[in-house]
Image 1 (spheres, one colour):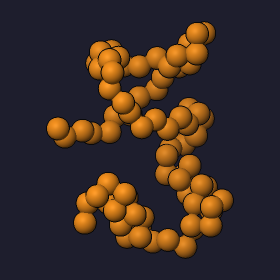
Image 2 (tube, helix red, strand yellow):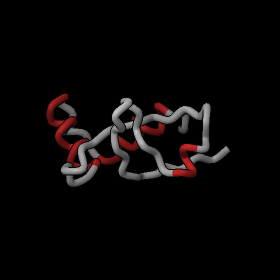
Image 3 (cartoon, helix red, strand yellow):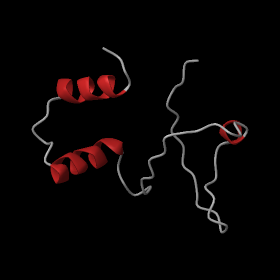
Length: 76
């Protein structure tokens, strides 16, 4: 099964649940890797850049990061 990333804006509801797009909400029992970013954040790349600086990874190249991602997913 091939999966793709999906970007959407959700809202935390009064009961603590996160609102989801209708098609995703129908995927009951599915498990997702979730990253929550405030809407005020320009994009995930600036978040990742700030996190890399904070963790001391700012000297990694794009190739290094791609390799880490592929290895973490078992792709060689």
